[in-house]
Image 1 (cartoon, rainbow, N blue to C red):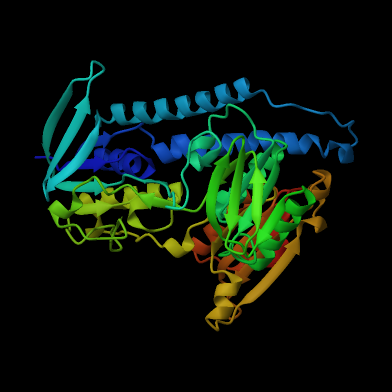
Image 2: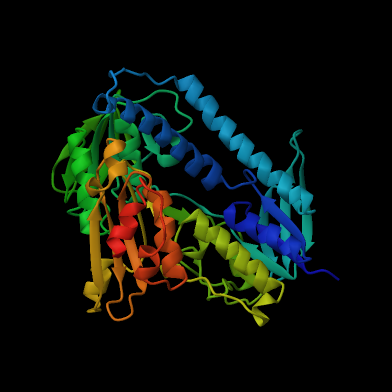
Length: 457
């Protein structure tokens, strides 16, 4: 009998687990309440990055004077942009669905509840409004239900002027002014996006730097670019209330400062979607709603797994997908042979601001805090021919290595195409390559990647 594997949640973690397990011979069922592909992925990540790309194109047109071209003013076509977002989401969603269908993965459009360690109740509602319940037996269960924007009790969102990140797309209008509450990854991406579209943006920063968990040098480059674009930074201010007063939104901070704008968006984290799953009935332990997992992504109930945002690990689609793959391997017994455990410390991440920011592995500040000896080399893009050709020399490449062995431990990149360039350092970190391996690689000239070799030298 094939292993009956039931997955709750059809996002990156659930899809990767389903396709990999099906290839290995499992009988797979996915239960998804919103959209195959994942609500966070197709409703948050893809639309926001599409809008950021469009905003980036608008920003680029403002700089073309430095490339021997005559400046041109461009305006956003909201209807065309919305159509572009829908088209991209639709194509990606259809591709995922076709792949699952080709592997005979059963997809149930509905909600799920875990009744006991091996029983799941799936509830579906037909187009006519008829509700039906199906009981499924599972040899293994994966919880991959993602997360939703966190809304504090001091704020009431209305989806019109007081927004969560998910309310910002598809766009119906672009605000004249916007207050962004939250200076983490999502917050700074929204600052970049709205300022690119011409809004007067204020960022409420609860600490003394944006991106408080990132390298201060990295944060400084981004802050400098924000200030040059006219973004107002309220540092050391924590929002305590957001109120709508007519057509104005008033954000009050704990230090007495007040910000008035036409719109405000909350970007202060997320909460896991586990509250309606009945995990307690299966004896699954959670911490703050996140499922507690081991290195195999197993919960305390060994055949019930968790992956993606609900696992409480890095909230990245790439991490979720890899977790899903590892879960499938474990469910199908492949951990008994060669099996590489997922190392979260080696996950590359990117922030799609302008300039882009990306990092991987050991950070310089983290190493110094731990008293660890490291070698840090840094090369500005202003020294590379390609950056000058692109008329965009902002940022730098920083590589962290072991001074005794030369092994690459981590790195940070700020600048154009940082999200792509970090892959070289990520591969070096994962494969335990040395800086000499990068130096001796015959890279393209002229290319931004040359800065990687220079930093490694």
